[in-house]
Length: 126
Image 1: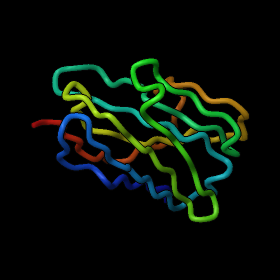
Image 2 (image 1 turned 60 degrees about the horizontal axis):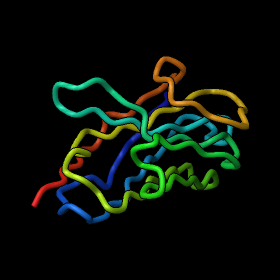
Image 3 (image 1 turned 60 degrees about the vertical axis):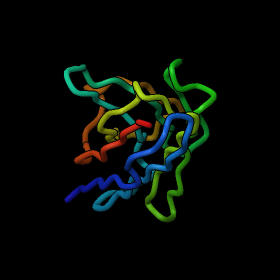
Image 4 (image 1 turned 90 degrees about the vertical axis):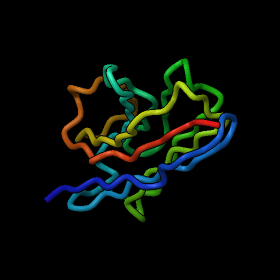
């Protein structure tokens, strides 16, 4: 049974940093693209970043480019999202998701992802 578990969320001041982790079980992580999405109250889910199966390519939403960094350790079945210079409007529940396939690129299309975690809350506030 596939299971994705996010961790690392919490309360941080504007300008601060958090590192989110996504632990995968029940699958061979190097056969999956991993994406990070977020959903704020009353808003649609939006893509944040994704990483190709082998980690060779990444993609970032324009709003986070230069501040967020996605990485993966397939040997540990882990994917990370380092978030720096956080803004209050980035308060949301953050989800990791897995798309099956050996893809050298990735896209932030929620309907393409097969498995989702339960999410971790990130709150950016003074």
